[in-house]
Amino acid sequence: PLGRCGKGCTHPLKTPRWQLAHPQLLALGRKLNFSEKIDRAVFTGNMKTSPNRRTIFNQAEHHPELLFVNEVYIKTSPPSCFDIGEPNVTLGGVLVKRCGLSFEELCRYKYLLNVGSNGYANKLKYLFLTGSVVIWVRKDSLNYEFFESHFVPGIHYASVDTVEEVPGMIRRLQADPAWAESIARAGQAQMASMDVNEVANFCFQMLKAYAAMQRFKPKRDPRSWEVNCEDDLVRHYDRGSMLEDLYLTEDNATCLRPPPSKQFSPPGWGGAYRGTHPPCLASHDLSAKEEVGVCTKGTRQWQASGRLDGEDWDLPEAYKGGALPDWSEVDPAVSGKGAKTMPWGTYK
Picture 1 (cartoon, one colour):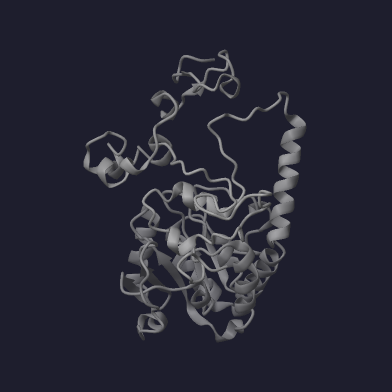
Picture 2: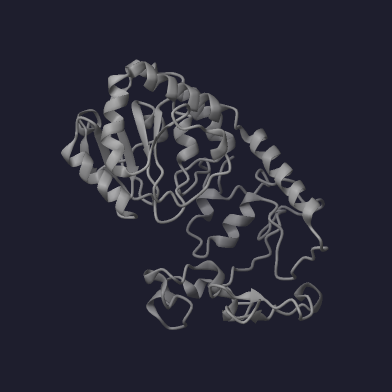
């Protein structure tokens, strides 16, 4: 769908929605024969988010015949490394904040590295669709993907315990191209089955199983709001209104079930949005040094971001690690008041 600006909607984090990316990237990954791909491993992304990534960067500097590492920050939109004719795309080595690589361009390499970050790195599922060998560094892989149990090391991907083992694994794969191609094709075929319908079925089965174990009747907190349309999320979290023109469709094209008898007009455009802003404490990672003070009125961080947030609706204690709601009080869904909390260490 078209955004408010008249252009196609694009995701600011550069990872396209799965219902579009799955068929498109799968088709692109099947275009190239494995033997036609560049015989190097590639990694692109922020190299300063973990020691493992910094090690990979150093390995590429010393072993360009094995690795190409392209350092780029996800919030920038640099030109394509291929379009500007960077020789390193085939010669290997490193590039720093000069250009970018799309998922389509990653399909040109035989080996793709999956190296964890200090948070959630979500490109693993996309890498499997490219028809290349995914080399997965398991140490310090902080997140467990729900589909992991369906992928077997040595069959669907090449597994290494630490980044120090990456050069040796690349050499093994280069020395046995038939084995490498079999891993690439098996991984691609496995991820090909995980289309949007399969993901929806997994979520349905998971929620149904949790519901069967539930021993209480859930009540909606009066502070909650329905997420019915993708537009609602953008409006709710785009505190500075920097993304709206790029991403809002204003026609309910992203709604799961457009609310009946709603006039298509601002601010709701038929969605669930009511013009509110998320509370400051709920919108920021206060453990990050760059966000310290963001919810304290008058600070530089507050002026830059926090002032755009809504009022905090709960006790600050609720946002500190380990605090739990005090359910001995009246349910906030009934009272309409914020839940009291029990600080960490005071509950059993």
